[in-house]
Image (cartoon, rainbow, N blue to C red):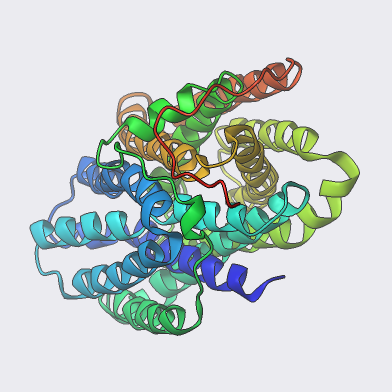
Length: 403
């Protein structure tokens, strides 16, 4: 694998390390100032809300000025965000730090576009799978630091994460080249418009239903991430260490799936079968989590099922969407997809928190499984349809007659 891809994947790893660090610890950090569980959901949604605001802009900006400067900005921003979390001494400062972390953690569409720039369509899913492995490893590292080091002080894990992010940013400054040559840059007039990349993505008929499935998938997954610590604390009396173990376990299986299993299955089954099968696996795992009553150990095999399903579905769906986007708009389309994902990450924690408080701990997971079943049906139906020609690009690209 190209060294550039590992450097880009490291930016995703750093972003997800922060998310993995925050989520398991958030209920326990908030308890320092308040016992209101709704605040936990609000802070989880705040992280996603800032991504909703920033990710589409970064995706389109990377089409305009290149991928490298945007990735470096995100890496240095992550270091500052983690340090701010470590120093926060009030709910207000914690919220500000989480918002900064969400903004700096919006590099995924840019990283995906970098991979798309530097891979052929035949190898794109593998490159995106490396990003998925970084996603899983970031969850492992963040959850491990949050769960195990947090017992010695809640400020220690984010301080260590800040040091790692800063080191990664400095290395990328030296070693990461640009992937988008000037004659391929897309000088659009809409990069400052929040929802323009969403509009660009929604112009493509074969992408629209896939984006709908991605939204449903992420509502369910984000709801689980923000709610699972409350679920295990309420039902089984788990603390930070047990929840960290569960997050680490999920991250391990996500990394195994996307760095190894995907590489083996991709040439055998193809992207469409892997996307559909992964979605179905996730739906089944979600429904079964809602049925676990007493045997808490059952959460681990179900978490493995969920990680495997997501590890197969997400990179293959992203690769298919990237290929259907066509040339010169991959950054905008992937930025639009990330905006929709961020919207789902806002809805998921709030809705799961509401369902948890109003109807009990089982309900969010049963409803999440239903949403994923619907997403699976949409994906299968879409892959059975013929692929029409791409619509013309809406904005004016740079002339590339020399390309």
